[in-house]
Image 1 (tube, rainbow, N blue to C red):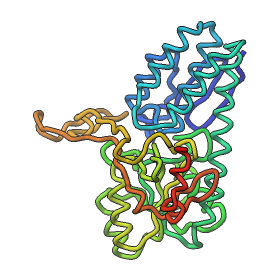
Image 2: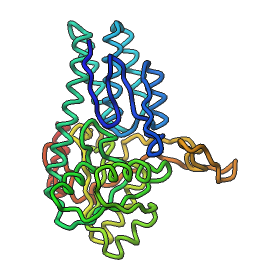
Image 3: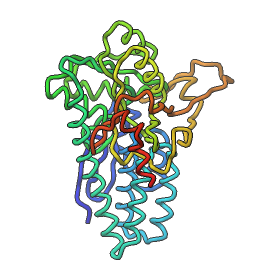
Image 4: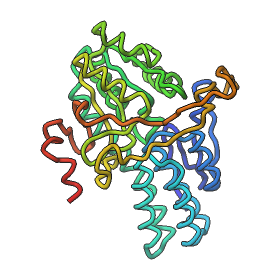
Length: 343
């Protein structure tokens, strides 16, 4: 029997997994059931389930649900392989499923799989709290912060990563306001981060991605905080498309640029950013827009589209990597602290 649990955007109730449809927010709070692997994969690919930590947790919990219903070892292993292929860039999914694969091999398989899924959820909550505490120490009183995409409770089981830092710093009276990039093409900033900050009563202003440079040039940005979907062994970071732009702008304007992520996002097997697989998404995400409000096409029907979901920010542009295990500095990266994990 599985115990109930609840987070901002996923829950278990009476042995059923539910996810909050992040494509319907902020207009609707719509909870969707996840009864099968095919259903969850569809939700993940449609970004109804999104955020590197949350994708991994939802996949792990579904395996636990299937195990509780009597799925055998072969079925769980095939389900795991299918889930693993659903998003190629976010390494949290692979790390979580590696642990679930070990649980599948344990005696008393069903109980082991269920216990491991719950353990991953609790670990994520602790990791988020540790990141928030570490990062908030770097935020100066009265800071005007800029963030990209969504990295809060919607993307994790806890308070979030970069947005968790902002939340904790706000609780400590350090945040004067937050600039929220709308985050084209799917507007995770405009729809999700703005919604979360509003729920938390943190003052913010929403801007188009192309307006960030103006805010920096006017001296109205004190630091930039982003999350990560994968950190390479040398410190290069893959994150939502548009992150690299901000890092370049931050360097030009002398603004600190921080990455906040759990240590599980570090991939020691990935030598540098060039080895990170970058997902290419559907052209329709760029040629128009769709959501709970409907769909609209604004580009010519035959327009050719380049739509990478992520970009890679070189380690040399990053002021600090804020992990649950501590803050990694550029000097430490130059000395090979990330690369040590390869040995």
